[in-house]
Figure 1 (cartoon, one colour):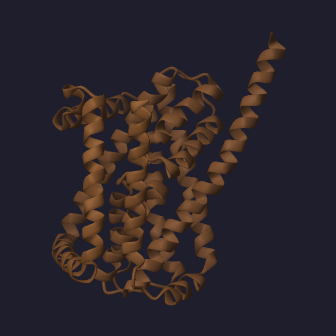
Figure 2 (spheres, one colour; figure 1 turned 180 degrees about the vertical axis):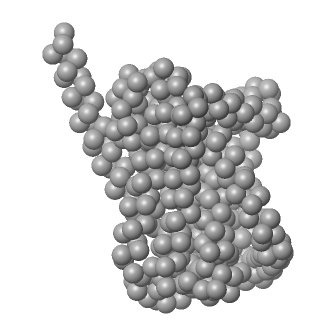
Figure 3 (spheres, helix red, strand yellow; figure 1 turned 90 degrees about the vertical axis):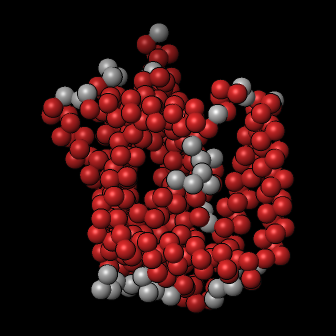
Length: 343
């Protein structure tokens, strides 16, 4: 009972934070101008973005299957893809629950061990964290001064704006948030032991699990390693291509098009690590708009890009998730029917 209450309060808190950040990003903006920007987008690029996104998820499903096969599990690509998309569908409402969901779905569809599936997910996460950190380092290498200026400008300006223009509202929200955090802390204190709740211990366990996952991925056979690397490149290329195609759709290409595309992808990816519902709603819009403004675009253009790219990704997960859930029910029914016939 206490665990359920804790999860509900967590969900309400993060949902409220997502709504607040979304309001903060769009408050005081010209919504008519924003809609004019979005409605004028070239839908050919947007449809191409959906195709690229689907390709990236197909590559992720194949890569997941590769890891599972190295653990002795026999899984079809379609089973892995349906389970994966079900996980992303659940993540829209409850972040981080999708990883558990896709492991359970694959167990139902292919009879895969939940522990094997979970281990492969950890391995995937380890590789992706390594790639993301490598890309961050690469970007800092050739655009470090601009990134430093971005943080200096935005932290100072954001703080001044929030305190001057929306100070009263923020003060009230801060008090509510503080009260909520106190409740969450007390519930966590009651429901977990001292060893489990220690932040240092949690960070150490997280780092250790990522390391083990990375090592397990490196244990693939030589030919499989190259295929694994190719699939990883396809996955991350699809991530980078998504904001690039949205920029082209809005006709926002300029002299720094490639750098802007990469910056939007990178900061957008970091924003999506925030455990907020609906794909880090609010945090994504706020950060991507700030990046665009820093590169000389208007705030409306930045918000239109953030809204379009985030909306397109959300639409994909809604449609693909709903379709994969229907496919999951149908495939599971066939599996149960085949089992009864065999008996």
